[in-house]
Length: 561
Image 1 (cartoon, rainbow, N blue to C red):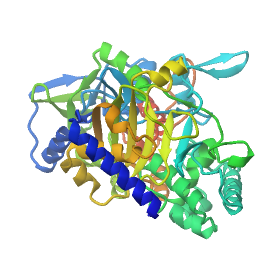
Image 2 (spheres, rainbow, N blue to C red):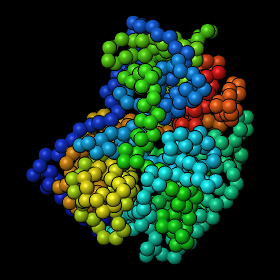
Image 3 (cartoon, one colour):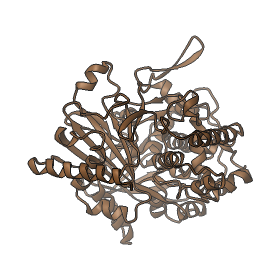
Image 4 (spheres, rainbow, N blue to C red):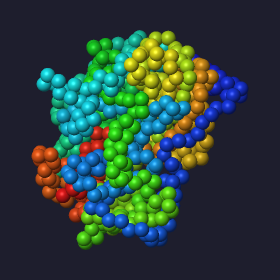
């Protein structure tokens, strides 16, 4: 750490400590119930499970209420299947896309945006059309302008000033810009190859292996690939590391080169900042709401709750595939009783380790997928502020705000929940919530710290990081709420693509010629047995909305047959 940076960090820490001495910081842990998750873990490890007190019958059980489970439930309803139950551990469905509010102000507790989906994700496009966020006007698709992220979208705090975009540009050496161009050329070549798509499994068919060139990228780390390509500029490598932590929860020294390149080549590319783009990414737009992707999760969950098909506070303990059906045992935390659900089929929309723990006599492909799985812990710290903050000079306040070389482990900056307000001037003066993100996939002992550290520890980490551009932040905070995710998102380490694609090739084939609204849906590569269909972003090794939703949609169609 340079002397100037050290002094700035030390001053910020001292400022926070001084201000905290004069007032008590109000806050708490919120969001995911870690104690409930740990109780489930201990119960599953204990061996003998309690017997059922109640038996219920439905046609289909959906185990897991994240985006994949919600998408599966929607697909069932679209296919005319109403006799199903969705079981969710937490008190609200949505998984990593859950939302909340602090002092009545909506804010994300996890995923906070959805890139405008491309043609490789027609299921997501259909959802947005159903919700009125996408419509055809004069023969062209148009997205709701009130949902598209307003400008300025992103800014970077670097060298004491705010700069538009997230890639250092102003005052960098010519050699830095030259490396930006070299990386842009490589990304363009990868994109033109057609080998990168979103969702990831759209790259190859159900019986087609990835090309050897992709497997070669999958065999090395992204940092190793950069070194091989001679991309050693500090600014470029900082930005690429940030992108990996943002999408995968771990840095470029951990994730595979395939994953690092996929981030750019599958969606938004990489544009040289001095040639038309401020932050290095092509401007294809993102959709966002004050509550982040919680907006989408709640819209998916609402009809299920209204129809009595959503059962929150239910921990799935056991899934047993039998000759004539499926048994699913779940602990109802409200009553303390175990409910046995008897069904024809089950959609297992659970994280891979949990699916392996609860599925009796798990199929070989589930064992193989879970064996090499890794997940990154996350922390989301929501800071409610009552008035505008003092701001460093430079670019105007934006939706996404990142601090270059953030001293906090895994720090990714913050998003402003008030950015989407229609009156920009009023938005700058109104109370809002800043959501600060930390991806801890590189941090040793991160899960133990999540369990042991008080909420104040994570609050002070966020305040200390943001005191550099906002020295008055500690004085402005009204309340802090911290959400912890012990296993937030899949980390695509080297070899993961090869493992998942091999499982896909060996996957049993199930007829998906079900007619849906008069149209024949495309056959989706969904891991399945005779009565179980598996759906979760973990099966892609890539925890983003498009992956989870598309896999859930396909599993729902499988279960509807």
